[in-house]
Image 1 (tube, helix red, strand yellow):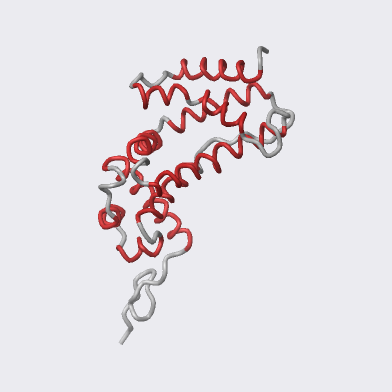
Image 2 (image 1 turned 120 degrees about the vertical axis):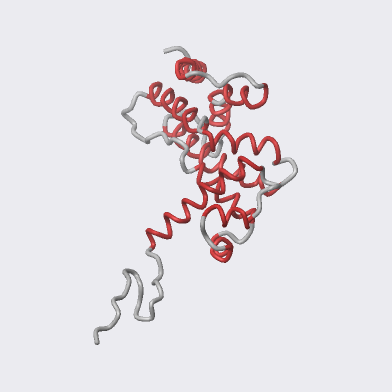
Length: 209
């Protein structure tokens, strides 16, 4: 009598084998997408690990194995967003002015995305009450935005060794329209307004062409 045909992905006992590294990576990325959307929609205080696990289609055991508490999950969500920040290529032959203008435009494009913008609003609304939120946000801002920009500026003689002051000033100028939207309620700038703003930022920062 012929043996039973095993289902694809199962072992002799009928149990499924461990998922591949690629599958696990996709599941973890999906989890962070789901968690970011829940944090944005409900806020940090109201979000629970149970509902995140359910919405992501994973067990609570798996969720806690990947992120041991809500603080760790939120930190991972912040870093996942920070990894999408644009980067300036370290090409010495590029047009510096054009590169910085494109950087401002790309930065607006990323931070205007619904989940990124929502995380920004969330940080304004609740970070004061939750120091762990503030720490994660500061890490994402300093390590993934300010430090790489300062390194680029330093290669062009625009930032002193060991300093990030000019990078901080440039980012503050670059993101002022978004901050005006978040803090004052002004409308988000149009693509044309972002391009004009990028040119003004670079002109102020570098001087007239």
